[in-house]
Amino acid sequence: MNEGNRILMLGLDAADYDVIRRLIGVGRLPNLAGLLNHGVTGRLQSPADSYAGAVWPTFYAGQPVTSHGLFHNKQWRPERMRVEVPNGRWVPARPFWETRAADLDVVIVDVPMVLDRPKTLRGIYLGGWGTHDLLARGSWPGGLWRDLERRFGLPLMPREHFGRQTEESLSELMVELQRATEQMRDIAIDLLDRHPWQFACIVFGATHRAGHYLWGRAQLLDVYECVDAAVGRVIDHAPTGTLVIAFAVHGMGPNRGWSDFLPQILARMEEHRSGRAPKRGWLYRLKQELPHHWVRPMLKILPASVTDRMVQLWSRRMYDWAETRYFPMPMDEAGYLRVNLCGREREGIVSEGREYDAVCAEIEALVESLCDEASQVPIAGPALRAYRDADPRAASLRLIPDLIFPWTGPPASSTKRLVSTMLPGFVFDVPRLLPSGRSGNHTGPGWFIAAGPGARGGTESDGHDVLDLLPTILKYLGREADPVLPGRPITAVMGP
Image 1 (tube, helix red, strand yellow):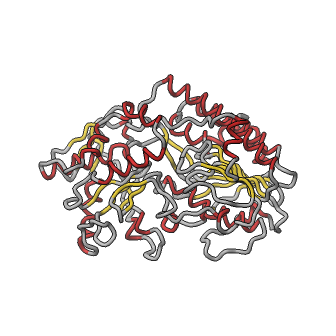
Image 2: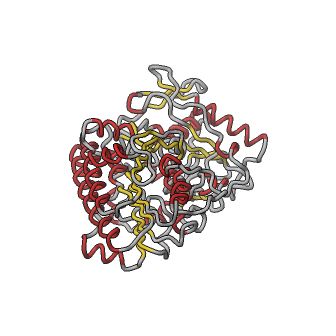
């Protein structure tokens, strides 16, 4: 392969592979079906089951989460003892088009979970226009954003309505996502036509938002159809001979829901054991007690800089750190718990070694003792000791959780009451509705469908990882192999 090659990557954010294949099978996704008939497809292992927010940084940095450090839109910052919205000053995740491929002519549109505003590069860079996960927004060249607003209107992707949902709000969401997809289609075509490029990556965020709130509903499939139509139009504007890769770095499935309740459950367990409620800062208590559907209207009108600052304020005093040995981190699909460790946390009280191991074992026993009262089935599987078992040389080791709990048992929606096999008399009555309002949540794996020069038509190629995407891109575009990257090129995409 050589530098004359061209790649167009089309991300269908969090589009589930099984849903994609089922809809292709019944003729509802003709454009993806066309790619599939002429190309190669396969699943991609991803870190989604443990680190749902790490999948896009793992793709664009080509490194595992312990190196790039980004796995949630709100993360614990140990040297400041608070939660913050990540940025490039303390999280090292960097996209390859800013580092390893800075000399390429590119068009980058709406790749999620990119830190900071778009940097100077050769080409066009639009970030945060229609993404589900938004950390930063902006454009390169600097006047591009204003030009797009003048020509296509303000961004149509709605802000996430995190919280209680209604039939009316869900129907409105479907319409909004279809309109946002059509707008992104037109912007993508315009940007591909206005600048010569060797590599382009355009991500449609509607499938992600729809997966969270429309999972299990017919409207989800309507959104998939709309995105497929947009994909077809964008492919039509790619020059002949372009390698086209449609992909997702993780999937979606039913939301088990326990991460919504874990902080509350742990507080109840500690109160049950000690006879007193844990000490909390008043801002944190207020945040926990106010229903999100009350707060949401105010949050929608506040600028991001204000809401980011609010995150820092409520988290700084969320516990009495002199007495807190462990605490929950912001989490999504899996449960994240962190030890207040000496030498890592600024106000750590748990010593490394034997005491640390004992606290981790205690947390594991507590969470794994929780089970559905009716069936007596545990809700959590064995914990992953993420911090202890990671490479001690990893660049972002200090940022990751100590324990990650997979929710392997009955979901919250089918559980009326939790009990504990470790704490006699403990009960937790499970609320009927999830605070998040999300019917779907992240799963692995991801997938790809590639068609064009070199791709082996009509074949399946499994055994690959999200980490393999970047080496594939670099190899196809004529770059030398980078021994720092742990992934390997997918040869079925590139030919012999």
